[in-house]
Image (cartoon, rainbow, N blue to C red):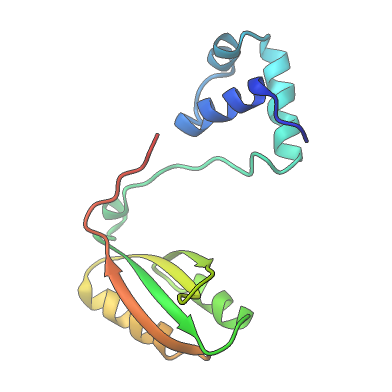
Length: 143
């Protein structure tokens, strides 16, 4: 699907605030609400807009500590291992990378004790060669 300037503007507005009313979106891009609704529907069906979510403060959910685990695997792909990682409590994302690091695993946990338990669990999985932890000091999102 082709993204013209209007579609790109709609996407930028939704990225900044996914709860913008259709009326506001339409006014911002200079189209009727029905036209904007059709464009959004087409972008959703095409998989360009994949969903909407709430950005929840991890500490509100009892996860005061965030970290990224840099993982080297003994072999790639290791789909079963990655699948097991992404389903562990505390894991919010797992991205496969090129280069020396094979995976970056984003985690949110209550404290360092919970982080150590999660690290130990991941380190004991098949095909994990090495695991390095980087604790997040500050997390700022564009938006």
